Image (cartoon, rainbow over all chains, first blue to last red; front, side, top):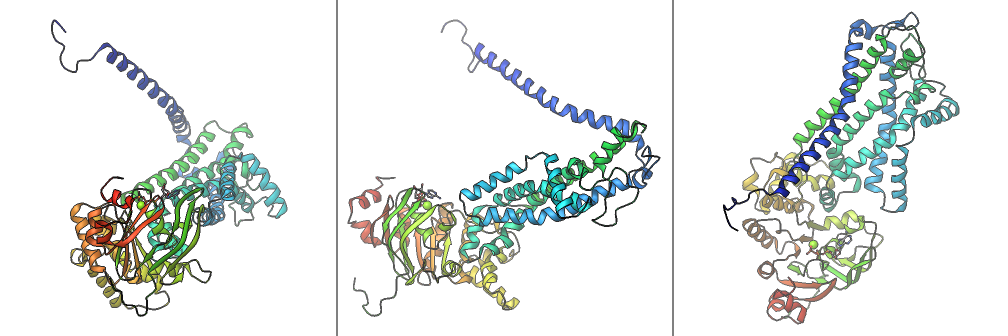
Length: 296
Length: 262
Ligand SMILES: Nc1ncnc2c1ncn2[C@@H]1O[C@H](COP(=O)(O)OP(=O)(O)OP(=O)(O)O)[C@@H](O)[C@H]1O
Ligand SMILES: [Mg+2]
């Protein structure tokens, strides 16, 4: 080495090239992320700008009138709540129980693995297939007719795999050491589950359920042939009634009612998406709250 | 070495021809272990030689893994624990286990200690003062009472590791086990914690039969009356601690004690 000695740790041309690549990769990945977020932002902006003016207290609390070209969305709103609640009542106990069995009791053998695989695959079955199953099983075979019951059970069957998978994951996130500690004091499986495993998995289970609710409330196909009506200006009185629903109502006024004012579908969509987002926000808030209290 | 000949008490733990497989992998080979009642026995051997496996067989906690298979027999206090009439819960009550990483339950200190008791006192009404007494007794016995008596309702997971490990021992006491299995109970602790827990184990001697796994030769020498040496799934040597350390009968034992296996 002659001449002026380079300072210690000075960069070389290779470093400069690496830095350029680094910058490029970062820019590219960032751009992809932006592309991902963009549609969501545009949709939300569009809905708020176009649909915002439609929304009023009256819009939320009155039924549609004039061949669904005017008035509010009350029956659809109430109907969606009915459908979701009944679906939850049907799917949560079964799903949680199945998940507890699979995670805590089932021996680790090929049959259990096959069942787990089947559940994951079931989650991928298109909703229209579930709709047809619902018609065959609940509407016709069990003779529930087109009703909230039939529609909700169809939704329940559709959401079951997801409830099972998310519950099982929450259960398995509870450290094994807790279970062993309990067994060691002579606790039975069930005592262990009830006193330690379930309480500690509860937050995860509930989060999963809330996310399910938000997904269920937007589904159209499974309820279209099983219990949701195009137009029904009354509120449902029981589970054997038909009902309007937000998702189907949106579909109907966009495609089947040519002279509906243009802003109307945007308004309905805005209410629907707000319901979903509110539910998701609730689940996130809940998760953050519980995580803050958890000490392990 | 003259043992009293009259009325030989049954061994705390006696295994006969114990083999254990994890799937196709054999972890224990024809182990014949005989642990005497009322003393501390330490179990030493290099990593992976099957110490934890042997311990976990003694309260049948390995069974949860579907792919574990055992042959041979294990007797606790003279009773074959694989006999059909044996209730698993009763075995676990008699054989308490302390793990390498302290694993307090995510409950308050008080509830951790009374957990086992609550499980087994179902149906009987236990007075509040009796429960308090039980918690105090157990915590006193593990030398923890004075440092936690003012915060019994805080989460046990917030204690220091040393305190957690003591608590894990304390919560076994209300269940009244006869045998305590300890799997490297000090390995997650600092030297001060180690000394404290060792002292505690020594205090419990006599009242319980203790089988303790350790990687710490000095600890085995200090704290146990008998020592068992294992190597790749086989029981190599079992004798009084000073004999095993000063006058080992097997080459492998000597090599291990002198640190040739690491
Ligand atoms: N759950 C398991 N499934 C498969 N193999 C296992 C399992 N647990 C242990 N083994 C194997 O069995 C052998 C004995 O393991 P074990 O944990 O009993 O050893 P150890 O003597 O306790 O070791 P260490 O001192 O590291 O704790 C090891 O080779 C290990 O890889
Ligand atoms: Mg081990």
